Length: 276
Ligand SMILES: Nc1ncnc2c1ncn2[C@@H]1O[C@H](COP(=O)(O)OP(=O)(O)OP(=O)(O)O)[C@@H](O)[C@H]1O
Ligand SMILES: [Mg+2]
Image 1 (cartoon, protein in one colour):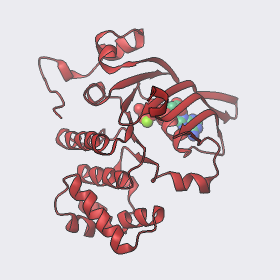
Image 2 (cartoon, helix red, strand yellow):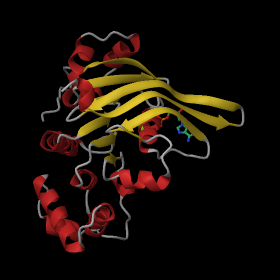
Image 3 (cartoon, protein in one colour):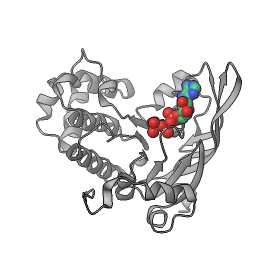
């Protein structure tokens, strides 16, 4: 198998332009990368560099009134850029799942977790409600979430942020998508919940071979989780490398700067590492 056959998601020459009252300006440009089956690709860069614009473009969830996307985004060889909303809705959730920063926003407060989990499964499969519930229970169990029956009966506000994020990842994983895009999945969580969420993502890629695009501004998370990493600055990729190489021998000045300004991860005063 050559490497191209393992590429699940390919982004080529991606540019996103925005129309403003002062003319057209460019949010991201010349973005090129691939994510392979079972690979975790880290995407890092400071706030505002274009990480979320990149992920929203892949999911075709951008603001279509004023953003224009140029370039190619292929999922298992199928072009996503410019697909009709109806087509894209079938793909989102089933073939390409999304885990966002604030899990509370992903759930509707008035429905139970079970209702939302089961509806997601039903909307992408021909399973009955009973079968969908069984699948939901199996997935919750397989990702080590205790008491799945009680969980499914809970409302979102009854769960902690960390628990909700793990449920959201379980929902994302249940249809075994080829790709999960996780945009700052641990940023809003305490350290313990961060670890559980990261372990869960790692388990999913190992067990299902899911390709994961892991977006984070936290280099500690990227160094523990990712195989390869791309670094963005001002809407462009400035460096792309195997994660060990990137940390040992950063080539671009901006990457060096990011590594230097890493928070206290490896400082003697407050040492902690992500133990997965
Ligand atoms: N719909 C939009 N219209 C105009 N500008 C936008 C739009 N969406 C994003 N931007 C701009 O694009 C740039 C990149 O934003 P983006 O949200 O991708 O940053 P980010 O790297 O995800 O940052 P953070 O780490 O804070 O999440 C920002 O300057 C933002 O203001
Ligand atoms: Mg963002």
